[in-house]
Length: 84
Image (cartoon, rainbow, N blue to C red; front, side, top):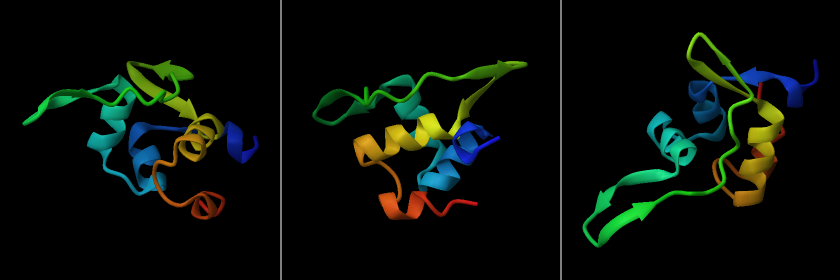
């Protein structure tokens, strides 16, 4: 299995991108709570889950990494190449 085929959870995605679990969840669902200036959305094209095992959504890391690079979210692009 290549790195891009590695299966990751929301928690692992958050850790790898240096973002909070809450932020990743908001990106996933495309919504966020109302802000003082009115309702807002985070419809940022987060990739759909690739698998769902016993109700736990999972993604191929390559799909998430590509999304992060294309949208400029998370750690700088050079840091993404060095995830463990």
